[in-house]
Image (cartoon, rainbow, N blue to C red; front, side, top):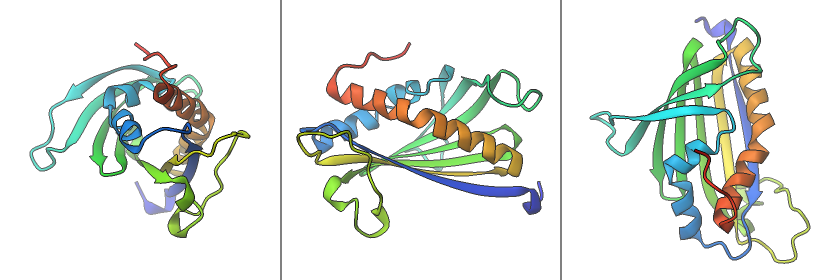
Length: 181
């Protein structure tokens, strides 16, 4: 597809983690790929694929999502894509390769709350009037590359779903969220 018709969108979301959450507990939960994939509210099903020889640390999945809000005729009511997830020292890198040339690169990383206002992590975290300050935050950075028409749709879905996804992740950290089957 011509570069003239392609574009890139970026999104950043930050969620404070519950006070008392340790880095190792948050990292272990974040790097649980089964749980992470199941946080997707539109998940229909997924399967594990073999790792590629050149990237044995990257886990591959074939994911099928229900996509009821896409414009009619653009995709069926479900879309199947490949998701590659790589654990990092402070989170995960999640790369999605979907039909119609969509490439979405997402990093989820754990950042000390005190570092959120410094350097490239400069953001304003949403807080909910917490009595006790959270030591850690989840920072999600998304880059979407695709056709101009598709980028707007995918960005809209990301913006629509991120709060619920982050809330369910936080629920797992607190032990109050059940895994979606």
